[in-house]
Length: 196
Ligand SMILES: O=C(CO)[C@@H](O)[C@H](O)[C@H](O)[C@H](O)COP(=O)(O)O
Ligand SMILES: [Zn+2]
View (cartoon, rainbow, N blue to C red):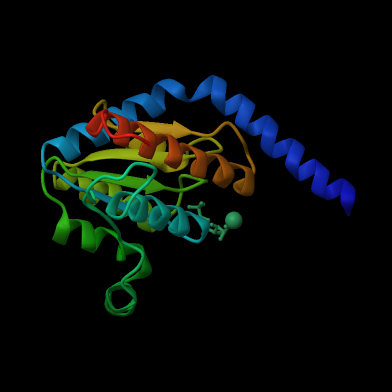
């Protein structure tokens, strides 16, 4: 069992080294789009399933409350958290609609959808992206593996940050690092003179 633990650490570190080579430009573009949207008075909606639901909430709490700087809260909302809304949409329509219906209700032109899926194939996240397009929102997709269907839905205005790994757990571990990079970029673009 100790070998399994060490192998998990080694694989996670190696995935992060590969991601450090492959992802900085895409992360920079995503951070620029997010910062610009927030400076324009727009907001960021987030969604994902399972561990990625946790990531979506992790990001929105860091914006709404704080990351590292003492600064005002920023407008973000995880579409995973309102159990009354999520259960009623799943019950009355389908689980595939739980995020898209909220995006159509809340999304405004210029807002951003942070869509998180390690496979890129979660139906409810794909439908949220389609709803975002219908609301003239930009999409930032955190994916892995081959990018799945999500990769094919993105336009030039959108950004995909695809972790170079086939393994869900390793992809999730890098997604969290990417989320912290995005928070750091936003803080340092919007509040460059505030100390960490
Ligand atoms: O956290 C894990 C596995 O590490 C799981 O809960 C995982 O997030 C769930 O199986 C998700 O439904 C996977 O969805 P996705 O990443 O393919 O969109
Ligand atoms: Zn997990």
